Image (cartoon, rainbow, N blue to C red; front, side, top):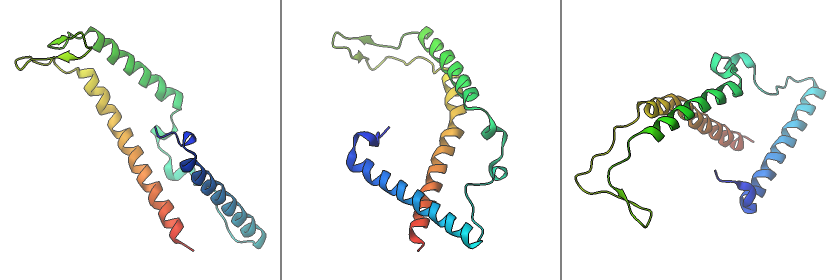
Length: 138
C-alpha cells in the first residue's frame, strides 16, 4: 500500500532500525547463553494455537478466490444501475432514479472479511504498542 521501497527517506530508517534491533537482540541472546541465563527466541505455538491460525494460507486464498468469483459473476449479471453513461465516461443519474438492490453475496463476503480485517488492525495496534514499550525500556 505504501511501498517504502520507492521512498528511500522512509525505507532507510526502517531498514536500519530493523537490522540494528535484530543484531542487538541476537547478541543479547548469545551473551545470555554464554552466561547461562535463560533467553527466549520467538513465542510458544500453544499460546496462539487455534484452528483458524493453523489453516494453510493456500486454503484461505482458495476460499477467498471462490467467493470473489461468485460475487463478481453475480455483479456482472446484476441489472444495470439507474441513469445513463454519458459520452464523457461519467454515469449520470437524475433525482427520481432508484438504485438496484444490494447483492446479498457481496454483503456476505464483506461480513465474512470483517473479523479478519478487524483482527489485522488490532494486531497492528498491539505490535506498535509493544514496539513503543520496548523503545522506552533502557
